[in-house]
Amino acid sequence: MRIQIDHLTRYHYTLPMRSVIQLLRVTPQTSAQQTVVSWDINIDCDARITPFTDCYGNRCHLMAIDHSVADLSIEVTGLVDTWPSAGIVDSSEPLPELVFLQPTMLTEADEAIRTFARDVAGDPAKSALDRCHALMGTLWREISFDTRATSSLTDAASAFADRRGVCQDLAHIFIAACRSLKIPARYVSGHLLRQDGSEWQEAAHAWAEAHVPGLGWVSFDPANGISADEHYIRVAVGLDYRDAAPVSGARYGGGFETLSVDLRVRRPGQDRAKQGQAQGNANQ
Image (cartoon, rainbow, N blue to C red; front, side, top):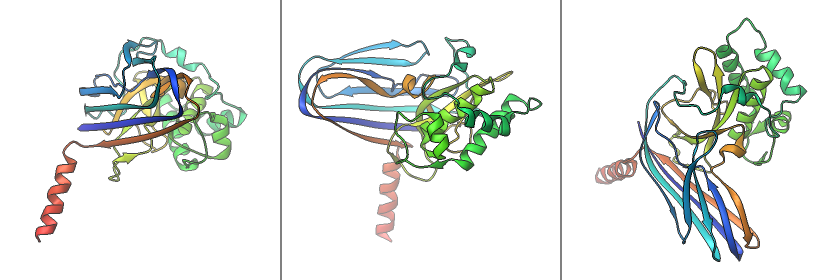
């Protein structure tokens, strides 16, 4: 399946900023599950872009601007071919899986999450795969998807206590629960081609991967209750959102900042198909 990504991030500053450094984790890599056909990053001002690979194996770019600007746009466009893999992730791993047992501020399991994990998936007689599927399915049923309930700083315990959040929160809760059961788990950022026909999205998608003996890393998306398939594009991984955030950084000056994001995820050629359908209807 070929998927097209058009991702535009705009910044406006009430005062011209003097300099900015941004870390961009927006570039997917070719693997057994996906092939990057084309991928471009365009900045609408004079900027230095330095590519590098971080400790998690993510393809990153460091963007530096050392002159005054009041508006900044980062445009990411690309085509990726994907294949079904039953959720199994086949990729080279720079770090051992035990690294992903380490808790973070966003994925620290409190007593409520530990109790939930034991009740839902604590049976040692079950395989790690079955336990992870049980966690994912229960979170999908019991945590309400609410874009207004949390922020990028909300931790797993807070979102779990409120029983609501977005894909980032569900991934953090799943990771916290897995780690409390000594199952290595990590955060994944990327894109999802939605099956309801909605092309425009408010933000990139997020899910999780858990390390299952005999299979390796396996994907779990508790926001949708499924393992990642050919509708997903995997971009970056980390211990939590902060390690895989598409854009992060710092600036000097600029006053107050306004941020807007336009993200479109679709099959290539859909515009032409829709135009043809509309023309056909008009001719009837």
